[in-house]
Image (cartoon, rainbow, N blue to C red; front, side):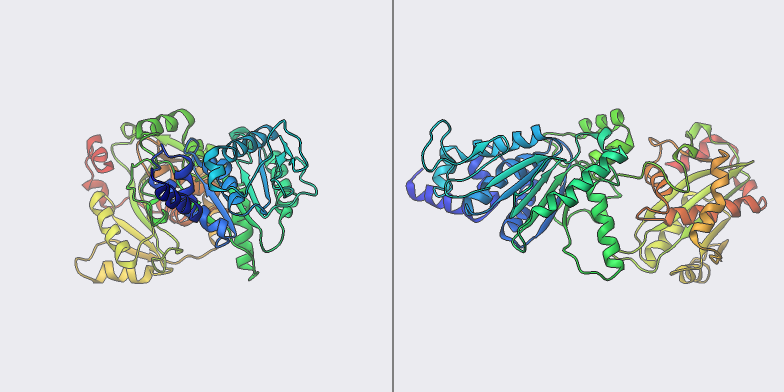
Length: 497
């Protein structure tokens, strides 16, 4: 390589973290999401972002970028920066410290940032700077890098850049309420107080373990602050799931090119591997650790143990009643509520949830989804739409518009949703509500998780739909649809698909 070419390459490496990563890792070909992460880290270094949360699944090289290379980049551009680094344990924090030092002592790095110098080990001079397991100083600067495990001391240490990588060791720790409280106390009263004022930037890079982890608590704090009209510095989020799903499509990053079923890093973590993780770990752990989508482990109203499961071959060949129930919304937007459409069948004292559509939809999309569901389940003789949001317009369009549908009825919401939800808990507690097994319906996992999270979950549309359905099915009488149903099990199974 000619000297002029090398000079150009070094100049580029100083202008952005992505170029720096390529400069330090010339034999690596970064996937698209590494480039995206690099852009966020560049903005953080420049102060264009003050607080950044990065959530990614294990094994996707987030720590190499955020904890081994990024501190070296920050100190290379400005040796006066001070980095405070934390992780779940002192051993891991020290390991990241050593890795950062190793990057900074390479000749490649020294040629790029000649003004950023670590002292030579074993050589004592007037300019010797600290290099220990707890941190290091650059020649001519103090407190350049200090690290600690959660609960460890950072007293007297300051940071213009605060980096917290994996504050929880594993799933077991994150599921301990006491450990979560200890981690939060250390984070909020020790780690985040090490800043130096307006110059401070903060980075949290983690795998989600629990709905009440650090990221979850920050979410709740920001939600409360917004509700109270308080001013605060928001955390910018980069959340990347290991596997794209239909449910994640609406909230995926605009630069995410994936379609449902696409892995984040297929060259390293194939679809087959991720499916094995899902089978081995179970859906709850997989959703948290790999999908960055932790769910409430137990609700205040609906208990997880109440949800009985059925398989298609276990469905009764004939139901006493089948109805469709719709919880609509005002409009489709990035922050609007979801529309929940559910088909329920009642046989004797049991209620079977047969089909669900749950997504953000416009008025026209909602009407089309109801028509589609009716086509899938022609046995449905009544379609009940709550008279709230655009429910009035939906009922009018489906009954008086082109190709009207028989049996569409609007019903008012008489009580608060908490009251209505509480009124149907008896059906669940008695074991009379059955939902499909997770492998037979792709919507059922999110349905159960929303129910058990109520009333503290992000959405409650399926709770409202359920609260409409069960009392109505229990209080109605057998309709004409009973005679139109096939007595064969095959007809039910066919509509399932």
